[in-house]
Length: 369
Image 1 (cartoon, rainbow, N blue to C red):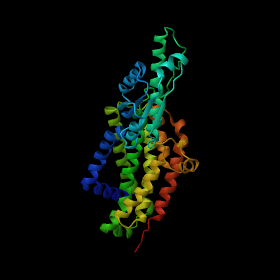
Image 2 (cartoon, helix red, strand yellow):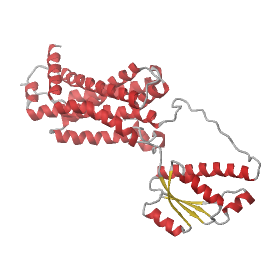
Image 3 (tube, helix red, strand yellow):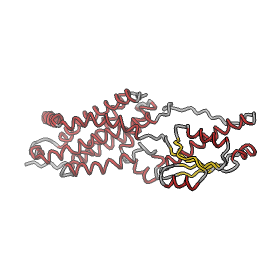
Image 4 (cartoon, rainbow, N blue to C red):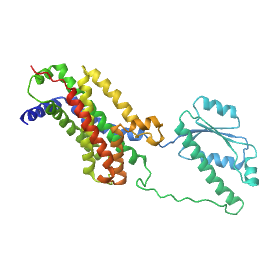
């Protein structure tokens, strides 16, 4: 125990002497939480729209004004030439071309049918799908009101009244910010733990530790505990910023978040120490960490639902601890889940923690002289 105490003193002294590391612990999560939620939005606005009006009727003019006044569309062209509009689509000046055919208004009154064409730049599949949905909703809603006023008879409508559970405001911030917490915990704690032993290799202090009677387990514990402290600082900063800036507070128990974080940081620090044991230089450790973190984040269900991934990717996510931590934070923040609800994720994280830190301990080659 006394050797562990001295090791911990050494680890904390190294952290506090590294001014750039202290700045990163505070500044990096603050900047990421202030910027990333705004950039990582699923909402689509300012979709560039071109309208080809072959009817030139009162109705098509009104529809064009309705679409251009929407916050979702920026009207780039209003023309009668499809070729001109198609050129703008090819040159990335438009995302969607809406074509009103001749006799559009007459057909509406005679047959009550909506007939128009859309050409969509599907390079960005999400923008294409959302843009189509927006246009369909706006046009259908406008035509229903227009026809009911013109024929002085209300048209039958199907009214759907949805009831949203958990994220009742439907704000993507509430869904995204807890996931960003996990990115911060993963990236910063992985970097610190991966660079830790490598730094000692480069400055030569690892040789001094190798000749001491310190056990491998004590050595790993001494490396993990400071990472826990750093992780708690990052998590606390994130929770405070989420409350002040985004008005997001967890529906569930805050202490349950910290409990899950203890296990998760233990997992990531184990991964980092394994990387540190393998690498010979800090550059190698950084590259190995980056190589590991990118697949974890991309296959973690933060940006893409796991159910939407191909079968092989869904299988890989089962061994991805990042996935389970994202699920835990979203369940606690949005649903108010209790321990019994997140027990499966906690058990899996615990298994990862035991296995990875066991590998970290045995992969540390201690040389006694």
